[in-house]
View 1 (cartoon, helix red, strand yellow):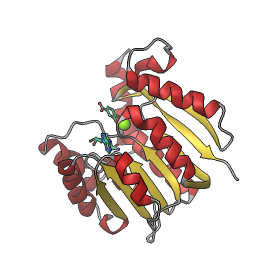
View 2: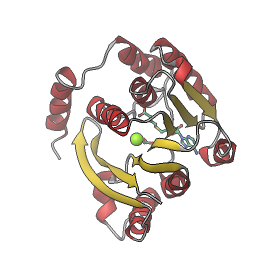
View 3: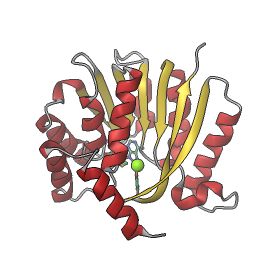
Length: 223
Ligand code: SAH
Ligand code: DHB
Ligand code: MG
């Protein structure tokens, strides 16, 4: 691994095609000041999410794992004025930091941060006016990614996208004997998708400022 090189390339991409504006930088600073871990998507990854939200023409977005609101701000900005993003966060103190940054970025009207373990929040979304979704970003506790994915598949329209972060895990995805439960969960998710006609998926390995990981991208097929 050549982490310095990966970070330098991400820095260049961030200075050219995937630049952050003042509000995004402020959200990173606010999260840091409040002691949140710096594990938000990188600027190039965030820009990819933003482009995909636009490509799908999404109006309703669901996110698992808000942290300080960085990815939520990026995706919310890609929505039309009447679009809506619901983001689920277990920790009330993170949600509060996120709400302030989301407000500061001018997308407060479009974003709802729901506090509590995501699995407990899901029943409440069943009859929520935000479902079914056009786009889902799964980025919370990694052992539950397959559970979040299963629910999302049942609540995303055909033509919608479901993205899951952190599925490659330093290559543990390829290791059948990995003792990392989170890695085994990503392996189960992939195996589940092998036999799932309702979605067509791939996983792209990524290197960058966050090391070696990757996104799973799944297109929800028609009925
Ligand atoms: N999507 C964010 C990063 C999320 S980091 C971004 O890119 O900006 C993962 C987040 O998931 C953390 O904030 C963590 O508190 C939250 N989380 C962990 N377990 C959770 C759970 N069971 N339900 C909801 N959120 C959870
Ligand atoms: C962690 C979580 C993430 O979503 C991520 O992208 C990187 C690290 C973590 O919990 O350590
Ligand atoms: Mg992540």
